[in-house]
Image (cartoon, rainbow, N blue to C red; front, top):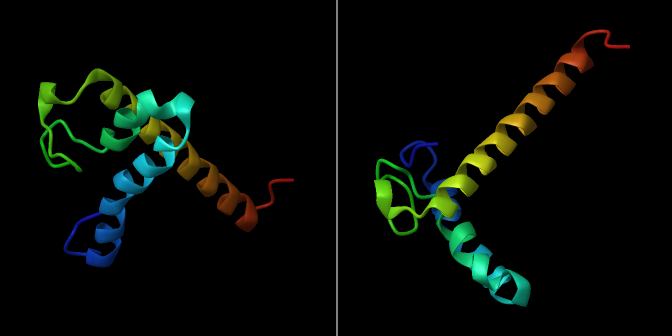
Length: 92
C-alpha cells in the first residue's frame, strides 16, 4: 500500500501501533511484549513505522514477529484465493 494511493487508509494504519499498545498495556501478562507488537511494522530499509528504525536498530523480536505476521497474511490470502476458486469451479 502506498501513501499516495490510499492516504486515508495509511493514516488509519499508522494509528494501529498506539491502539495495540494501549490494549496490551491493560493485560499484565503481555506488558513485557508490548514493544514487539508496537514496533513490528518497522522495515529493514527504514521505511516502517512508528519509530522509523532501520537495520540493526530493529530488535530481533520485532523482526521475527514481522515475519510471522507476513506469513500469516500470506496464508490468509491463499485461503481466500482458494475459497473464491472453489466458488467458481466445481470443488466438490
